[in-house]
Image (tube, rainbow, N blue to C red; front, side, top):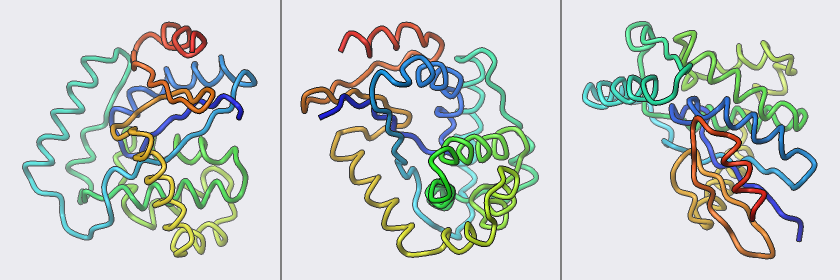
Length: 204
């Protein structure tokens, strides 16, 4: 069984946004050395209910903490004024799966485009129309994407990835672990030190 680096994330997880520059460096350094699998963690199920005010305040405070903890990470707080937030990340997760169906390279491209739209452009990836616009931005076949986004098979693929990550005990996002000889080795997250994480992965 090939050694595998598992990365569990959610495109609408704010700590994953802060981790993204480090993640890219890790993936680039280890490409070709072991298999790399990104799994969607499904932070928040589907809902049409507005996000409670207390949760909105909590998330804004989280954004502020991340900006302080990870130099170079920015958030556009206009999101909370311009959009109608819902605690629903499953649509964005399904969008990554629907994008991936048109080519493996679109997994990271769609994730990155969702993050940019959400955190920098104050757009809401919980909304289907926004996700379709983002699919067009990265060159996807929009008709195919729109159809796949709402198919039951896409939801089942998402649930399977969520179950796989939970079974490995990777319940927080982002999470990294190396599977070697059937044993899973969790990797400590260092948001500002990719080299330390690369060395820890290679030591496994």
